Amino acid sequence: MKNRTPLVASVMLSAVLLTGCSAAAATHPAGGQGTHDGGHHQSTGVPARAAAEGPSDAAKMVCGDQPMDRLVAILKLDAPPHTVNDWADSTFTCTYHLDQASPAVPGSLDISVQEARDEATALEYFDAMQALAPDATPIDGLANLGFPAYETADGKAVFQKDSFVLTVDASGLPAAVGPDAVTRNALAYQLATTILACWVEHG
Image 1 (cartoon, rainbow, N blue to C red):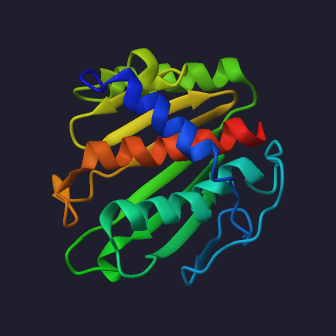
Image 2 (cartoon, one colour; image 1 turned 180 degrees about the vertical axis):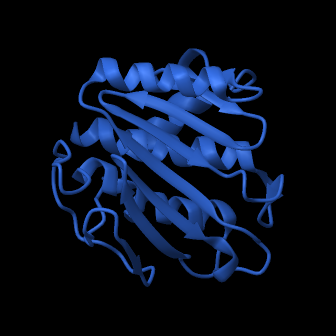
């Protein structure tokens, strides 16, 4: 973000890298949906490229322990929220139903990963998304962790790494959420960098 200090970004990444990362244990058929009860998942090891029949381990990390734990900590939720995931059009999406975890946090949050055939294609997809996004603002300096990134005024954070385009979409939430009144942009950014740190660790 334009006014985010480089120190905050670098400290945040270092802290997440020390925690270790794991992917979601549950897998679902292509185009299917599934849920989990908020419990912890088993690690599936180093992320692999997506096969035609389903998402890669790296993509499934968006429904894993680290994003969930980070979300619970940031918003001070009493319990992990219910999630639903979907795989369609080479995109894995995990929807966090926050309103079911806390009445103080109405709405839901989507984290998705578009899987491209290679890095160049992913960058083309990212560039197209940024060009079409209203009020898109590049995330510059150390805050982007060295990856192409932008945010939107309504609470989306988008990063491109390798053959992946990661989108954290908090636009379905109020402008400020949780007891600490965290902005949806700050929430989206923190969750995105948590996932990127997992990818860096296992990449």
